[in-house]
Amino acid sequence: MARLSIRTVLVGSLWGMCLITLYAFYPKQTYTGANGNDFNQSAPLSIERMGSKLEYLNDKLIEKNYELVRLKSQVQKLGKNSSLGFDSTAAITGYSRDIIILKKVPNLFLLMPHLEYNISSLSPQRKFGDIRRQVEMVLAIPHVRRSKKDYLEGTLRSLISQLSSEERDKVVVVVMVAEPFNSTEFDMVAKMVSQNFRQEVDNGILEVIQPPAKWYPNLNELPSKWGDSEERSKWRTKQNLDYSFMMLYCSFKATLYVQLEDDISAKPAYIKQMMQYAASQDRWELLEFSQLGFIGKMFRSAMLPKFVNFVLMFYQHKPVDWLLDNYFWVQECHGGMPKVTNKICADLSRVRKRFRPSLFQHEGYHSSLDGKVQKLKDKDFNKKGPASQDPVVYAHQNPAAVLETSLKIYQQFTIERLYEGRSVFWALNSEPNDHITIRFKEVTRLKRYRVVSGDNQHKDDRLLNASISFLPVNQNSPHPPKSFILDNTGFVHFQYFNTSGRRSGDSSTRYSIAEGEVPPSFGSVTAVKIVNHIENQNWVIIDEIWLVT
Image 1 (cartoon, one colour):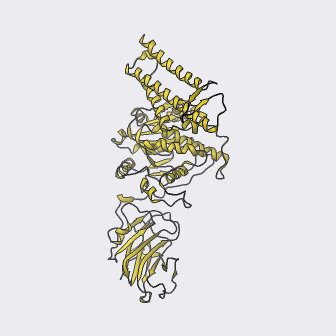
Image 2 (spheres, rainbow, N blue to C red):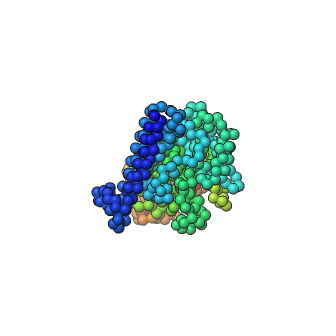
Image 3 (cartoon, rainbow, N blue to C red):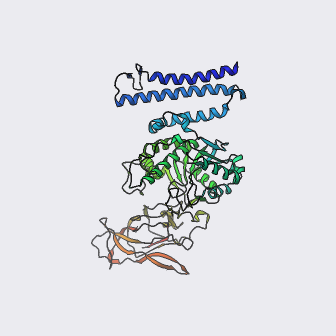
């Protein structure tokens, strides 16, 4: 009797959901919508009223689905009864997750109308593994078979082989075979994983999933954007949908979500460094552990549904790394999108933070888009970073000043510390017109100057095309030979840095050096400016500033 009663309740609940939906669409149905208006199905509906009606029906569907989950929970409390004919624990867990997704992304069925309110489209159609939940970090890897070479096994070896025994209890790696219409590919990946990483699967460290085919709309009628071919438009649009499904699925797995690719390698102790960096930041929404594309991006899992909702609004129009930039600009920055997209607003830099040197390197040469060759390499990956000996600073007593820079500072190596002789100045790759400005607290008469950029451990980290200029008190004072007014701010250009400079006792390293005398006729100055004139993919070290009064 108990078995019959439980099944009767469940079947009755399902029929109830169907009847409510039919009742809502019955020709003479009148009901109250979300805005308090009454609707009659036989009357013509405006777009606004149709939207309210859809919102009403969506809320009703979610409400009834919740009722079904509660009924299944009651079944679970009766114990695991094999006579029920299904795994109640698994059914409840999966169904509850899908309902929560709908609550967190309430516009999902409006943004993806092809799903037709089918809640099963939010769950993988096939799985291998899926033992572990509620860990600290999930590493998410979408995978598509390449026609010439596959990199997935090497990627998994790099990631898994470097996990410590303690980290193995805190991490889960999820591979999503993003080929929903190709069951053979899922079988091949599952076989490879079983043969090479069986222990990791059994211990819950590694799992493989395949998204349902019904998650994807028809990709044959996409808008033409950015001069992309039809094939490329399909490829980047599908990538957005791949990422979205994976994020929603993995948002229940761990506290932190790290987006990776299937053709990367990782540095030793990469998990430890990511954990420590995340713990050291007070306020953040995105931490980046690679400068390339969508590799090494860490999110708090709790914010993933919000980001997915944004991606699904524009998934047909832009690649995901562009949408990531747009998401944070809309959320954090005043005004519209900047004309120069690599300039970061102050608010954005507080919530979107970059760890350097990079922890992941892009290894793939053949792209998942047939015929595309991807030669990109992360130039920050081979940096030794703070683990190596810090560069040597050449300390001097300089006039009291207030310092500012547009260069992006690396860790604790600030321009103030250099000026005070406590460390070098170390900045990330620079853009044209990036500057360091030294404004004296008192009018100062300089006799000579010396600024040196470079380091014998990090030989490429120097200014390659930069100049030094001074702001005189008397704008009519005689200028030195070959000098000129730099801009309308009144700064007078003195010289470009000599990029073939040498230090005494170090003939093997080239330095960029600006040094010389300030003629007495030039008079007193109020500021010094160092300006970079070209895009520089290398970092910048300045190990000496000496302003002699």
